[in-house]
Every structure is written in C-alpha cells, then in structure tokens.
Length: 365
Image (cartoon, rainbow, N blue to C red; front, side):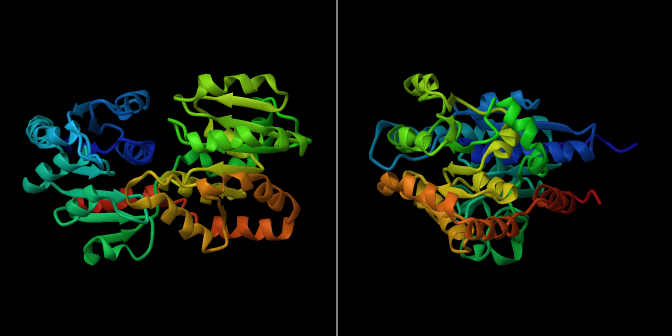
C-alpha cells in the first residue's frame, strides 16, 4: 500500500500567484485523490481567503516585501524574514511534504529555502516575462523552474527551465460554447456588443476612471458594459448601475461566462490574465499597471502586442479608449487575425505539463 502523497504549495500576495497555485493543486488532486495538501501564504494577504474558499488549508507567515521608499515597514523586514523562516521550518518539519511548489510572492521564499536545504524536491512556477526577485533567488536552489515566456535564461539556470505556459482555469477551455448562457446570466442584449472591463480582483483606479470618463460615449455606440471595479472601488462606481447598459461588479465569480459574453475586453496585463486571454482569444486592449515591480505588466503586454495579438493603451493614453474600441469594431479582418494570433499563443495544457514536472522531481512515475 503506497503512502499518502503530501504536497506543500506556497505563493500569494496577488491573484496572479494564487490562482496558478490553486490550478496546480486541483490537477494534482485529480491525479491523486487521497493526497494531502497544505498551502502557505502571507498572513494578511488575499490568499488567506481565496485558498480556503477553493477547499484547501493554509497557514500564514508574517512576511511582506520591501517598500520602494524608506519606511518603518522596511525596518521590520529582517525581523519578519527571520520569523517566517522559523515558522517555515516548523511547518516543513510537521507536515513532512514529499514535494514543495512555489508560485511566487514573498511567502514562497522562506518555505522553499527551508525545503530545498532539507533536500525535499522543489519546483517554482514563474508566471511573468520578467522574473520576480523571490523566484530568481530560489531558482538556484530548486530542481525545476516552469516558465510561461521564452528567453527566461536571463533570470534562471538554463538547465532547470521548462517552458510550460501558465496554469489557467479549466472552465475557460470551452468559453465559445457558452455565449447564449453568458448573455442570459448577465442579462445582456444579444443585439449589442459587450465590453468587459477587468481591473483585477482588488481593482484598478486608472481603468475605472477611464471607463467613467468614456461611459456615455460607449453607450452612444450601442455598447453595453460589464464592469469589474474591484472591491476597493465598488461603492464609488455602483451609481453607474442606474444607466441602462452598465453593470458594475466588485468581483466576477463566473469568469468563464464573463469572457464568453465579451466582444471586447479591457484588462490589466498580469501574467494569469494574459494567459487566460490567450485561451479565450477575444479582442483585448491591455492597460498594464505601471506600479508593479520592474514594470513587468508592460513587458507581459508587449510580448503579446509584438505578435499582433492585442492592443496596448498606457495609463497616460487613457483618453484614447474610444478610438481603440472603434478600431476593433470597424476592422473585422484585422481583429479576426489578432484573435487567431492570440489563440496561437495559448498553452491550454500548461497545468498538466507543470504537474508532469512535479511528478518527475518527486519520482512518482
């Protein structure tokens, strides 16, 4: 009788680190129904809510990244790091994982540092085209690094890199068949085009302001709007529900139906969003956040724009939204080519490929 497989997964801080981790866990659970899972995240971040909601236990570390400016929080960083390493040692010792997986974010650093020193097989998954500092440091210690973009040997040892793509929700693989269901779910007019606005789960002020300034022009073009404002901004923008053809949401729980309903999508360019949008294959206007480390969202977006698969709009150019939307509505042949190019970049088997690499380093096959 084989012993129960024990899988430790660490990562978080943003949805871009959390959702890939959950997707990997779900695929492992499909293959090993009796496996035990434990997640480790930062104790005050969104993973402490999202991971239990997905059905997995999680422990929190007192950890946070360094701020760009000199602050009291930065002075606490060494204390938080030492505390997190000690707690990680305790977690690893008690849980006794067979394999440890990191998906980025500062919480994954102490956990994978401790696990790799103990000789436990470790794998990290880097979502972005520009590697995060935690994963760059960890890559020297782990067995494998799964990446979603080419030319990542700039950041990681070449012999450890496996090009897999980013994990995505499996319910996105057949969104094209859900159009009628999606229009009914969101109570949309099937005779109008639908603009889907995504600023991330917390929200994006610049995107919200752009839609606020453009909403009358969009409605005049017979465009209806499904607008995810993010939980930080829903109170401010809820008033737009009074306009016919506009609906605001703090969070969209049925992302497959949101994508299925959309004719045009405005989105941030986080790695998970980019990977999902490649699979969906709809016309996309990326508005990358300039406020992330190393401006990696712009790099993510440009990797798609350079393949003629999407349009990019900088925050400083947000007054040109209507021009971009009208271009997408009026140039059907060019837009169809963009969508085909987008789909060609998709990696629908990414989660399975990553799990196969996990199986290899854990010697489960």
